[in-house]
Image 1: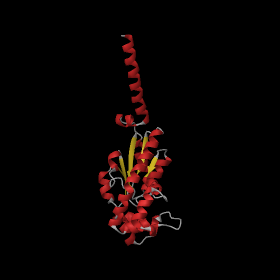
Image 2: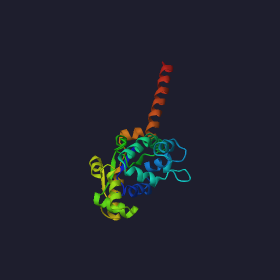
Image 3: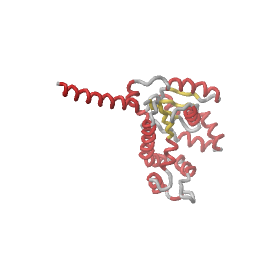
Image 4: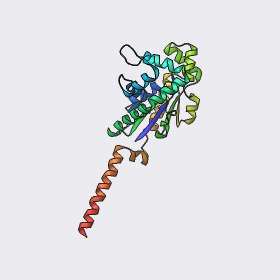
Length: 232
């Protein structure tokens, strides 16, 4: 199974690319969806985060007020690092479980959409790595327009993440999303062609089909061995 890593930065257009993969029939494991499930009321992640940040981050329904929590951690390096540390084990487990489900479904190619791909060291499990890149100027402009933020708030959120230039330097494939939607689609079509290429032998053996092939070979080998012993 080919596990493609997809990452980018806030307001880079990563979610748009993720949706293009889904529309093209490629299964996507979305770390943001996993993170939302991890913070559901009463879950282990919810309990640890509430214990660390206090009940002031809760809505009347006692679900986490995600915008409020986000505003809190984006303005403080120490709080952001604490949140990442608390959430990381739950998110990693959730992502692994979703990958396993796709494997069980027989998927040959999947995309793992993780904003913190490099930061949580998930890049070692994905190949190729696709980075959706924009200039910082474009990133700030889009973020302010999208979320109605001041330049200072937008800059704080951008600076709280690993620089996109650093991510670009670690990528196997870079999607330059500084242009319009038509340009993005043209680049995406090339990326889609690349990740749909035939699996390598390693990727094949990692797939469900490959695992069953190995199991079948072992069973046939055992049967043949027993028949040889009986014949002798």
